[in-house]
Length: 185
Image 1 (cartoon, rainbow, N blue to C red):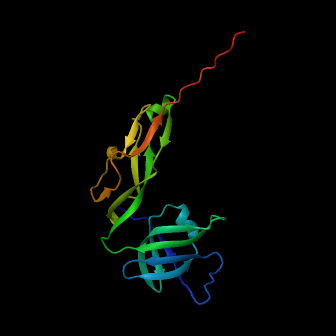
Image 2 (image 1 turned 60 degrees about the horizontal axis):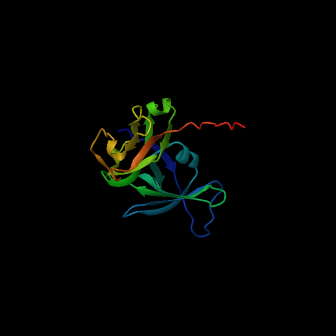
Image 3 (image 1 turned 180 degrees about the horizontal axis):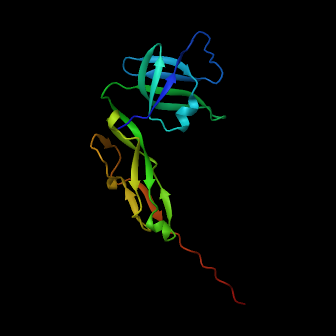
């Protein structure tokens, strides 16, 4: 698997006055042996380009990491803080795997509506074996058909799905046409 990695240049955080520079975001990088606070600026690349992994350059060292938590401002909805988790070689992680749906379901062609319940699933495995996306083919779904977690076909056994097999990912909802009854007087 090719890792899609974004480089982040981190600036040392000065705790003395606790003021952050304009347009910078506070970040924390942690693991068992690491706990570093820093500022970084290229936030748009993080949030809008679906990067799963990040190289954080801090004090002339490079740290491979993933996002564990993002905190937003309650009013402006701007990102104010991001926690990064530093990955070690062959480390097992718990993460969310985003789902991409392939094809137009048969039931939609017949007037049904695709209802998506889950856009990601929880997985556990060695980070380098977890794919960027889980592709699910839904072309065969007819009206009232459901796609369950147990229907997922994976191309490798290097990661495990941590969801109930009976969880519904999506289904085709039947839309009944309303008939208009005219009152005769």
